[in-house]
Figure 1: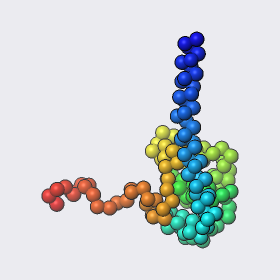
Figure 2: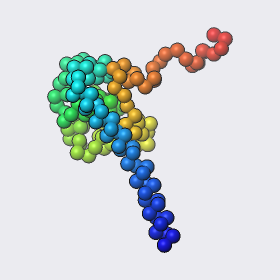
Figure 3: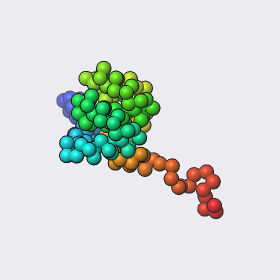
Figure 4: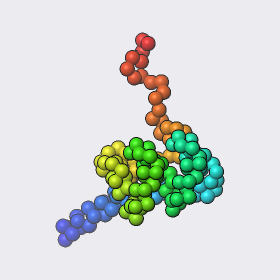
Length: 150
């Protein structure tokens, strides 16, 4: 009896660990779709600014994907994998039924990498800032040669 309870508890813990990660990405994508429906021009402008591509290309991408959040993900995965949006779009069209994790793998994003973990967590933002609002820019800081006495 104790073995069954232990197995059931481990099973429930496993479900609790994997479901929220998937739910976070889904929640993020759902909120992007709501944002796009509310202001498609603003959404398109933010994608253009954040990913550094002309709005005309963003609008063309938006017309070829199933929903607005998919356009964001194509651009995000393109940035993460250093591939052109058109390359990501072809992979998306071929493999969208497999999910974003499978698409990321096909684009060369390794499972276990920081990028792959960010994908699974849905750890993205749409800010319209070229750095994606993640604070990962090359601003002033205490890098090499920037100590107290400089």
